Length: 106
Image (tube, rainbow, N blue to C red; front, side, top):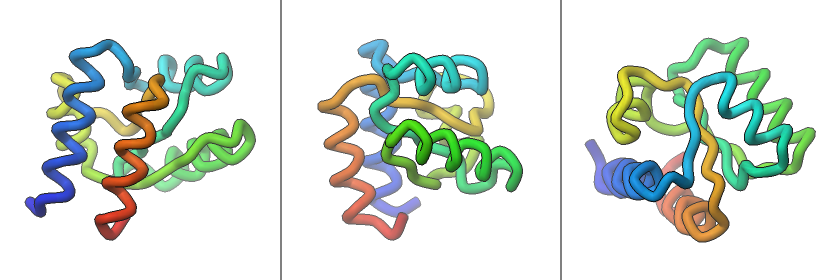
């Protein structure tokens, strides 16, 4: 695992502990439609249809979006089994993630 990927996982883990991230299809959609999502992360290995749906939602609501990690790694850093998507609900975590993703190849 590359250093940037590990740092992204650490950041998402901190957001989870702080209660500033939601994951799972229903919770992510509710956060986006409710205006609470600040950044949308979708697993790179999520189903193509899911990736497309999340991309459209992010575009419609003007939320930064990126494909990174795998479903397994995304779930692991959130203390869950597998997760295809997660939404950060905090501006500070969102800015930190944007910076990290800019450093990586995402």
